Image (cartoon, rainbow, N blue to C red; front, top):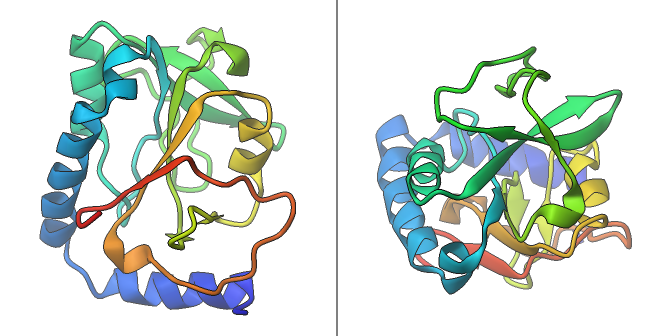
Length: 181
């Protein structure tokens, strides 16, 4: 078993080797797969993340969901907890960044975890069993325990790592989507 800290370092080293163009091309494939999911078509309230540089790029998916008249919510970290704020446009009014994560401003409406039907989840890494390796603060794990939403992990294939340590508080994903799978 690989300790989480070491797993994160290994994956981040691999991510540094891929170009923005490679990420963009992989992201387009992933976004197209997301658009075809029955749950994407059927869900009304969908949580998604605003991408960081070395993650699946979600802006196109956010725009698509908004055009489909979906209720789109993004995470906001406040007092070491994550809440979801509703946005009406992909060029939403930004609030304070959390680390390097672009967040909506707090004047957006807070949406209850119970209202969310589908959540697209980011990661540092993942394995073939749907286990997710996050950034280490537990924001998503704590939030995901409060919702019955379908959990769909969006990841680049380079983020796959088998045999990292999984703990009892880690929340398993329902579906993993990469550019290959």
